Image 1 (cartoon, rainbow, N blue to C red):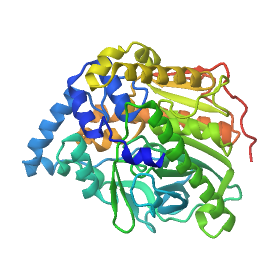
Image 2 (image 1 turned 45 degrees about the vertical axis):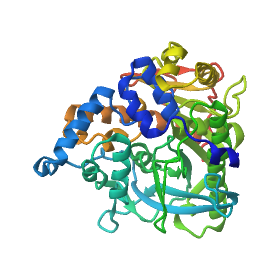
Image 3 (image 1 turned 90 degrees about the vertical axis):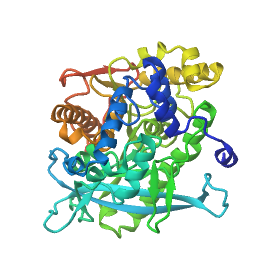
Image 4 (image 1 turned 120 degrees about the vertical axis):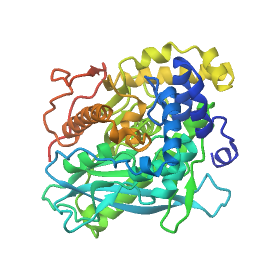
Amino acid sequence: MEASIRSHKPIVEMESCIMEVKLIGKRKFLVAIMLCSLFIGNSVINAFGRSPSQQEQQSAVATQQSKDPTTSSKQTAVTFPALKGPYKVGTERFHWVDKSRPETFTANKSDHRELMIQVWYPTNASSASHKREPYATDPTSLAKAYEGYSKIPAAQFLPLLSSTTHSLIKAPIAESNQKYPVLILSHGLGMLNDAYRFIAEPLASQGYIVVSVQHTYNSLVTTFPNGKVVNFNGANSDSTSYLDRLITKVWVKDIQFVLNHLEQLSEKKSYHIWKQADLSRVGMLGHSFGGATAAQVMLQDERVKAGINMDGGFFGKLIPETGIPGPFMLMNAGYDGLKNLESIDPKQAAQAQGLDEKKMTEMLKHVISRYKQAVRSSYSVSFRHADHSTFSDTPLITYPSAPNDAARLQALYRTHSSINAYSLDFFDYFLKGKPSKLLNGKNKIEDVKVEIGEHVKTKPASSK
């Protein structure tokens, strides 16, 4: 694994892929995104939440605005809807080093795997005593990174990335006689661990400790406390065997290290957050490749009791005939994800990406077969108006005009609200033992479709 990670030259780099998808049709476009972000894409949308024509138009507008300070100054900041839970939200960032694992993405054998972690948790503190966290701790560096991938001037992102969130920095956790369940969050390939506030903050406000893991070298950019910056390394996206190794040898081990470290911290009971963490009730959710990681972790580690894959594919170890052990939810962008995948022409897709047709055929077969297998043991929840990026904050952060586009923004908020409702209902049922309002499909939310697999796990955890 170590040698293969270091030696593989990515055939489809994130930047070149994003620029290339502008020029291709719907089916080819879906494959391009699958190769870039490794997800089950269901609508014509690129990695930054816009169709090709929208991206070209927005890029031109942004370039013109960057030359006009009057126009740029009108850019408004991102706002997030009010939290619905009984708690306010605290947050803290941590730098954890796995000294048992050498870093496989560097040539220095003395390097060990380093991870940046962000935690959101319930608090009773107020903004009068604790500062609200800005969206980005280093807006300038992040804006430059977005510019490199989207070709939109960095200056256009700064007002958005400098916005404040609901989270109160290092606020004390709300003390309770009943400890809080823990949710592990895994980002998409090339994404960021703090780009999921739309779901992390609401879950924390409902009494969960959300631990978001940044997979170093596989995220857009990682900044460590000592100032070291690590950029996205890419992946050999035409090789399913490489992706299988990446997820099992790196991403799953990242999560297992975090679980191990949480157990050590919880035993010490020396820090306010970990004293309130109930590690007997752990769930996991992930987006895209992070969603695939959630499935793999549940296959390999019984400590995770329930999982959600937000619009992700399936890589790693084969899913058994009975499906994924434990309760699992598969969230889909649009209603026809599997149908769209099965309609892709491998030859056209291979030509569009400059890849070997045989390899493309193998990849599609690989993804479709595992998707079908996973569906058998999952709650499949499909959101009609979602695209792949909707399962993150990306549409807000990488589309500079979004805060000024009221209709688009409200539509996004509605879909985010639906995603949050099903996530909360799922984890409340299986980790807290609360009655479910949505999983049986009888109580419906508009533009959401629920399907229950034949081997789905329906028994919730006992209430504590």
